[in-house]
Length: 296
Image 1 (tube, rainbow, N blue to C red):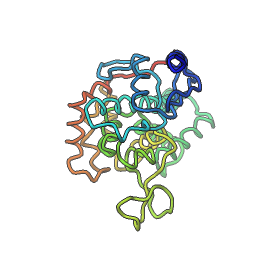
Image 2 (cartoon, rainbow, N blue to C red):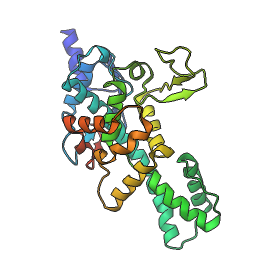
Image 3 (cartoon, helix red, strand yellow):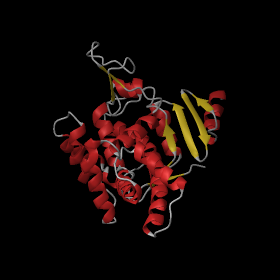
Image 4 (cartoon, helix red, strand yellow):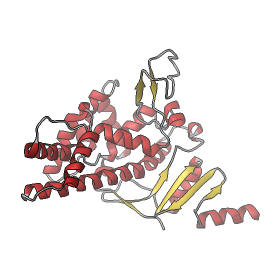
């Protein structure tokens, strides 16, 4: 009877709660899950009406997992397990996209002043320089020409990423989250550190010159990968294709951009693998104006 009472209490309240292995905290309209089993995660999704991700223009609850479920490695491979993986990552990707959108709006505000011939403040110019450094935008131009070029390139680089791309590549690189990197380092994209004695040592090559990045949580990993896609030279064609989609007033669908990911992967036919993952798991619709909603 006591155990039943605890279970009922857990279903009603989330703040700083521990139930079985789950540790979760409700904060600012979101549930931050620090540790949970797969069953507890699935029950939490069910409680907040997060059962499907394939509908267009959907609203997804702000349920953010710090790491993959504690028993994830033991869960048998199946489409059901893989769909849970997708639902775990989607709110995190959308959260990072919200951050990117806010940055873009700051730059757009400066851009409107520039186009309308209004003088830019020191704060405006400082913002552009800070974003240029962050997003790897470089020019030797000075004055007004510099400002115009920075605005153009920053608005190409600072933009939201198709959730389908972020999720499908994470699935492929980690075998749906079951890899050692995903479980021990929260590394979903096999990001490496070279010539430094830090990070996770490759299991199959102890004398290697590189390590894999260890992230504090899944969110930090997705944020770092998003910045890389929005700044690294390997993704120039990706960003240009995304810019053209924006000019046509349509979302940048992942399947159209998958071929642009080839320069950043050693996988043969990465575009084809991504395309198959899109089709089988109906990931296309996650790109069609998804949004987050607060949990009550």
